[in-house]
Length: 116
Image (tube, rainbow, N blue to C red; front, side):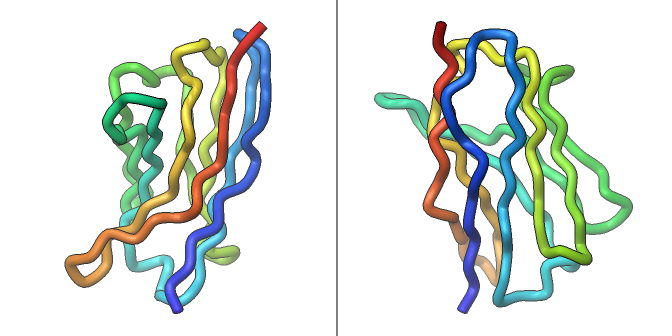
């Protein structure tokens, strides 16, 4: 029943911006930590950003600090990733994640390509 659905990916030029969305269902969204990960071809999946359920505290990978912002709307069961000043090395499939009862759950991913 738990489901995560990412959207908002696409092709953008270097320096551009994009906002990703993750629609969640099947669990009490407001009680859980939500995260964004990304994976480029030939590379390990890496943690990009985290937003906690209490007080909305956040953490970011060093590579995206100052450029990306994670946020959540508990009334809409949605987590967002606002990306700006995009670089070619940001090109990857971006995944939404939740850890619930000891298990990791993932969305289908959304492709982000940064190229001129």
